[in-house]
Image 1 (cartoon, rainbow, N blue to C red):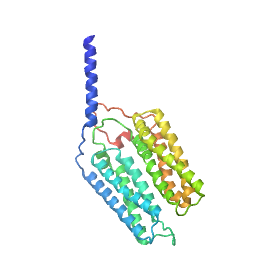
Image 2 (cartoon, rainbow, N blue to C red):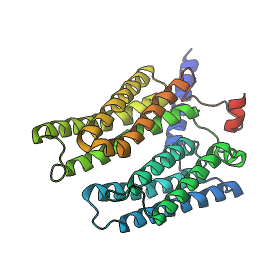
Image 3 (cartoon, rainbow, N blue to C red):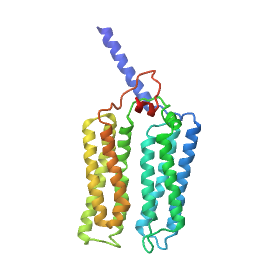
Image 4 (spheres, rainbow, N blue to C red):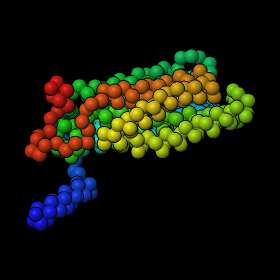
Length: 310
């Protein structure tokens, strides 16, 4: 009896030690493959294309306004996102797929809304159009390799899993984590309308701005914790994130149209609509799937394509 209790205590301490060791253990990158090298080079080329297209667009404007500067800086910050994507591919992390998808789609929308001239002709300059087309093709190629290349799939599935998390759960987490940035950038642009181009009376504008900022704070506080508990598999967290997605899906486009007009709705509301629809869709697709479970010891990693076909 006493020996059984002692053995149980020892095994429990051993389990905690293993968990702690796994938490602090530094992971090493996987051995590079030809497919992973090509994908990382393509991602790097896409990041360079983002910088070039934004520079061309900024230089083509005689007097860039506050909104253009804010959106251009946000688009350039996406280069950091592409660097993180390169690292995720290098380390063979499965989160590279949903992160790459959302990063590519939002980047295309960000550059497209910046390429449209603010005044004069409705058609951008030929150099801007050519740069946007090249960038769109590069982003599409990155997404295609992440999801359709068997060699890339094998590389991203080669690392032994500590915890199994379905791809759709990861997609939901990455999508909802993008809500904060998609709220913040148009909010900063809307602040600029207080000094130039205000569409509504000042008291109404201030009330809407305060509401917008409160929504941003709520999302910034709830989403990181809520999305983590979604990964862990808590049902209440799925309902919380789903309800929050509905709120931002309705509120952000309405605020964009009210303070920034139709132009703001197209430039900032549409990316939020796409992302806010992707999050609940990913939650729906992941219903009933086991998440945050330890794989069987000795079980080799299985490529995602094989798991889906099974």
